[in-house]
Length: 508
Image 1 (tube, rainbow, N blue to C red):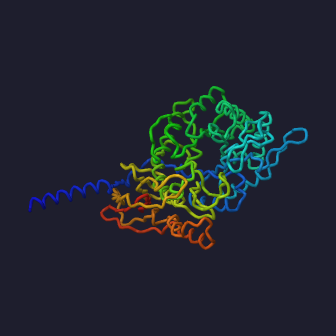
Image 2: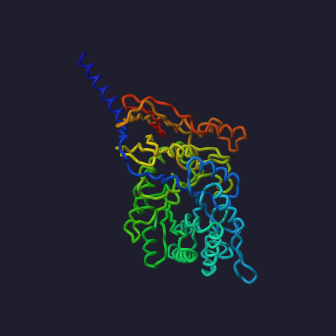
Image 3: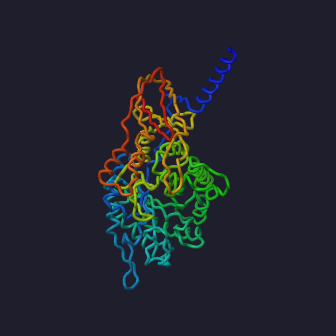
């Protein structure tokens, strides 16, 4: 009997040890460590719907909300040259006529709200297009044709730049970025073959901008799938054409075949930063090894996947993306800050897997709360031996530590899957603080029961068009939960994080 009890005890201890290895992690933070610089590169810029949408009050309200939460500096919309903005026309003799009315309203409005333009130079005015009927499949049918006459294109670029300098001054305009086109390696550019004809467009545009003022910053190639950065820089060197930054895009559900030309399966939590590392390496090997690298679009999905971009999955995914990408990129532009957005047409329902941090009517998604939490990180990164935590020190000397419990999304694709996390155990972090006496910590949470509007939306039966009362209830449900105070005993703090949860711990 005694032998049986001893065997059972050994088994229980073994099971407990196994569970502890799976669900328990010690995070040791040295408060005396000065750390290394951590720029908030993930919240410096956001993408948005096309430029004309900036004139809507709903867009501007969302802009102000995200600005207040993150302090972001730049916004990148498509389509400043589209006909709906009204810049380009021709007179009876075929000479160009320019109208800056809406452009002024767009940029005046952004600047008034403390946000600078990241100017994506697109798409083609139809009267300047080589093929006026070469339109993209997006709902707003932008023209993707090359120009019919580069002399006309060059004049438009120069007139555009001169007007901006005259209106805002070169000291202001020199702080903006001018990016030539959008994803020319996909179907957003109609030139054939795509990249050689894009290089023609880039060369004309860069030289025209610099001809107005050399301080104007211009770059590209704004490619999808982290492509052609090295080739683009080689072209700029060979052609002796100006370049001030490199830009590209990648999404977590891009395939290895498209990004790396391999057949491997790269998980959603690894793709973005592996692609960022690829471009970083190409830049380092180029004739411009110190040129800034801007990832001018990224997200966990390029498709409408409600279990991804609408869900609490975004908390751990974003935190881990920051951890992995730190030091490899200068700016990352999350696509997008708002679901005031019409690429697939007028929004039909608030939670359809839109890219925005805010759903229609300004309803905060979990991704918004993730940015709010991670904004609290400091500007010095402290060394950690962990793949599930990020420790920082703020300017005031406080410790700001993010811990998370990553799990794959509950579903993928356009159809929503009722979210359940029963299969993923809660994780306990024992945060050990060395070099500082502390008695308590403040903890903010994002998980299934904190800051998760989707839970409330599910409980409502997921109405396609919520009533005004339901919208008010969703805004309340989506708000970040009040922080809690936890005791620090003997320099140790236990933080329990459920599946797909993110917690931000502040110790002063």
